[in-house]
Image (tube, rainbow, N blue to C red; front, side, top):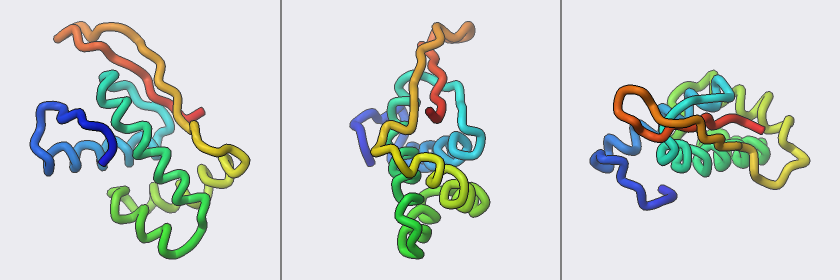
Length: 113
């Protein structure tokens, strides 16, 4: 798992949360979350898109190990990977939005380029 941020969770909780957030992010293409979570999501999402560019059965199965929904994995391989075929990484963009009203946490929007 990239990064060393623990995000205030145990390993199992953190892994489950990141898997779900990456799945939702790849499904929608855009997500608003805290800056630290966005920084953790970006490399994982980029790895999934890179696996999609490979187009092999082994890569598809590797992506299914991390992505929680099969329809999202299919979307990564059929739609997103061909879109970024000419690009060597850098598929995501993180834009800081400001502080959240409830707890003043720094928020950001992460989106596919």
